[in-house]
Length: 72
Image (cartoon, rainbow, N blue to C red; front, side, top):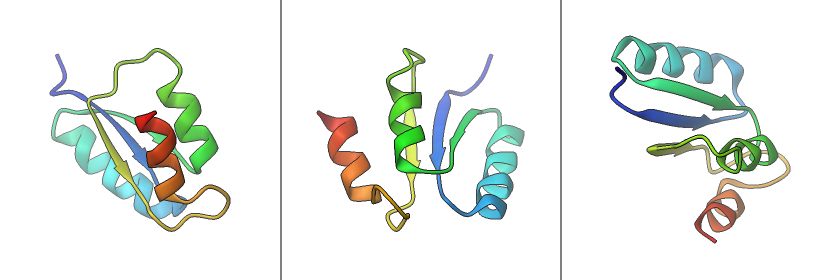
């Protein structure tokens, strides 16, 4: 059993891989998205997400816009 599911959103591949690995080692299930559109798609997929770690500065949809859409 995992500690919960985290949606990790960041356009920096190395950062996402490193943090995702650390979170997985800590017992979390990690779902990754490299941009805002994919983050929204993951959130709307029906999978239960317990926590979102969101980069604010991304090309395309900013983290602020992703947050607004996720909250609505």
